Length: 116
Image 1 (spheres, rainbow, N blue to C red):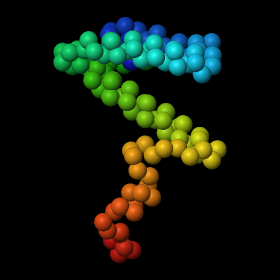
Image 2 (cartoon, rainbow, N blue to C red):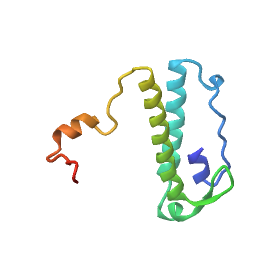
Image 3 (cartoon, helix red, strand yellow):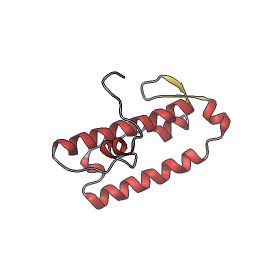
Image 4 (cartoon, rainbow, N blue to C red):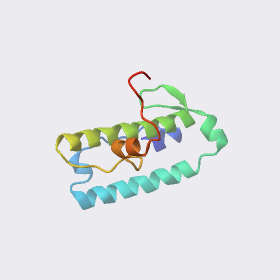
């Protein structure tokens, strides 16, 4: 969706139905194909293209580089959803930024006191 819109084309988002890729192997194949196609489109963007406006699927004009930033924010949102769902099921997940909250706290030089 993001790659098509930065090219100035309307979104061709097909949804996320099982018919697009049914099963683990088919899902990875589908993902790899779309990822490759998107990377090829993104690699064509130069400074002028990044500064131009594109239209979101809602028809809202936005500077292309800002639209691409939104893509990363959207991906982080979904990663958070996955971590939340796994956590509610008791599945341990790897830390997103390399350290757990507990590890960051243990490595901290000072601890806040009640008066701070």
